[in-house]
Length: 377
Ligand SMILES: Cc1cc2nc3c(=O)[nH]c(=O)nc-3n(C[C@H](O)[C@H](O)[C@H](O)COP(=O)(O)OP(=O)(O)OC[C@H]3O[C@@H](n4cnc5c(N)ncnc54)[C@H](O)[C@@H]3O)c2cc1C
Image: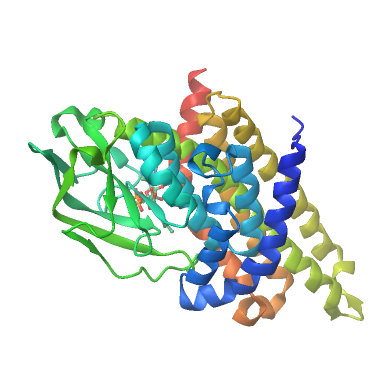
């Protein structure tokens, strides 16, 4: 497979690369220490990235999944946190784009383009990998729904304006009884927990949510009643493609940092890149990063061509997340003792990389998807 970007996509890549280098990369250490950067989010909105996945008729740039993948990869070269932030926002807004009524699209998508932040809430404290085991309940009433329950580990929570929440509308129907709901941040009965003190990706906000008798109008239902689980799984295909590219971006960031260090650091009278034990690391890192890119873009092009890509997206994320951690560790090794110091930034990338092995499906769950599919053929 040959990845062929259109002229517009090449231009998008160069714009995203420049934006990352000028605006995102210089803020990554600050975000690691202080959390979400509102000023940067504003700049991301002004540059048009929040609506990169949204059609022009709703004010967005009308890009496909390949375009999202390009932006996510570039952002991740400067900050895994900002790539996490925008990936979650796109994931949630894609659900509206693909499943919303025309009225919902016209209401929410222009807001998403203009900087309102969206989040996707599936996981609960007792149901992560086993997402079908969620317990949050949306009970139908005469004039709408009453939402009770909780969510855990929701990216963008605490900073989001809107949440897309998966809850049981018909508990007796299992996964066919799960529906999706649009929940505004100021809904009465919504409590947002404290920000999680995470190992990495600390510039992206993550909290628990609690729902106490939240009254929602009928129009809060997103998509068909009972289709929420299917919708969530379909949108996770996109999330996993983007995740693969984010990991390629993080890995390339680590590669570049280590390359600079290997050129500058002298041991035994030579720059350490002269030692085969060091230089061979770069050969492996390079090959693995290219493979990560190929798998991610292969799935992205399939998706944009309207083809099913659950297997390809899961394989891309599986390969990319696991190799990203290995590459960041290998790059850290190039720094010797300095790799262990926050001053040299590489340790942050190791921490950031680990989170991606869990979010949007852990390594084991992805192995289950991939093995289940290939063995059934
Ligand atoms: C930084 C971060 C951001 C996140 N953002 C979001 C978000 O925006 N929205 C959202 O809904 N969720 C989000 N999540 C939640 C994430 O999707 C879950 O953490 C993930 O699905 C794993 O669920 P769990 O944490 O409950 O682990 P568990 O499901 O309890 O798994 C624990 C371990 O057991 C393994 N395991 C579980 N079942 C099996 C099995 N059948 N076979 C083999 N191994 C198994 C898992 O692989 C894992 O290693 C986020 C998580 C993190 C860390």
